[in-house]
Image (cartoon, rainbow, N blue to C red; front, side):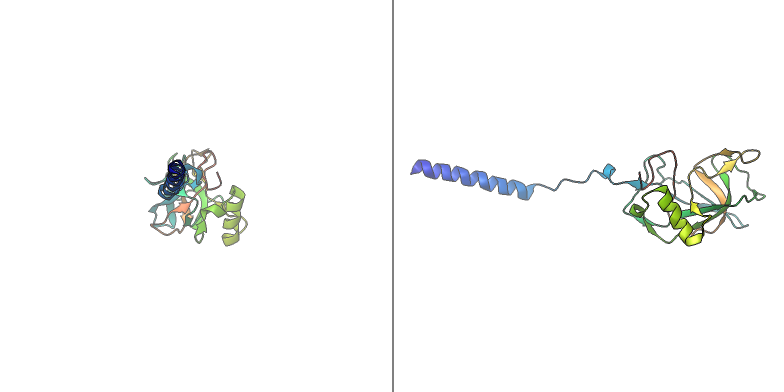
Length: 178
């Protein structure tokens, strides 16, 4: 009988420890790198002639994305129409001229940006067929604006200050769809 009680007590202790271990165990945490992130930009400067400079700031991560795709932010859209560089702007690699106009969409869930085409379609939905999501390298510079730079660009348009915007990048995995 003693042997049976000891075995029963041992079995009970084993079962109890399994229950207690499962109560103390924390659920596996999702690897934050498994959640896609997208690159975001913000307003850097505004000109008096209707121009605006948008681009990367200290929060921007152009290599991995800086904002989880679970966030809801406006998208930065661009319509390239060949606008000449206005006086007072000297385009360079880090602050090129986008040759057009920018605008922001209403807030969009990053996870809904499943491809570049999907993002472009949202800009077209709000502003027209010739609009697309702005891209990191849209700033142009050089004698005939033949070279593309990065990190920021000037364009015409209005975008609210103090807001972050989804912005595409074509050579890094820093888009919500990557």
